[in-house]
Length: 240
Image (cartoon, rainbow, N blue to C red; front, side, top):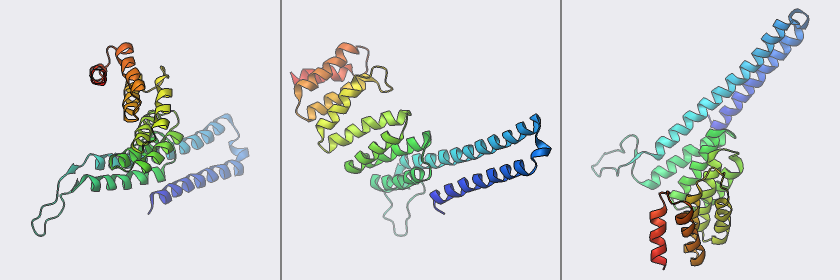
């Protein structure tokens, strides 16, 4: 049974339960119309709602965990001995592992429209496409992760991933514009020194050396304790 269909069945089950509660409330209104009765009925409705929500969240977390396990699986080329099979939990190539991870993550995305788990799945799905060198797909999926990620950290992380995809597609101006905006967000979730380093790298790839120098220099001047300072200084020395 497809994950989406299971999700619909869960939703329908919840609707049936709520309809039954409403019918009981209407039929027995005179008998239960007391403060205690109302509290019990309200509690039943709220309890059923949160039960279904928890069941869905638990399932989503389990599915995401399985997908992340695939992403971290060992690469072990299959033996050339006749009759040998691939060892359980391993993949012969990074491409094979990536495709398996994509399939697992896509199921999570299709089955769960919202929530932290769905946001994480969208981000990891885009990142997996990027790791396989499929930048065009990654760009599209990172944009989706940003649009549907809400206020989760995954939406912000997807912005950096989106920039990397844009740069891989040589859409440098779009990437630089996004990074410049992110570098101005001092109270954002992303570390500004890391954003500036990415801005400098993209500017350098785009041949905008003055802008790259300025970004590297901001890291050195504004974030002297940053772990990126050493690299920023080295880049500045090689750029002259």
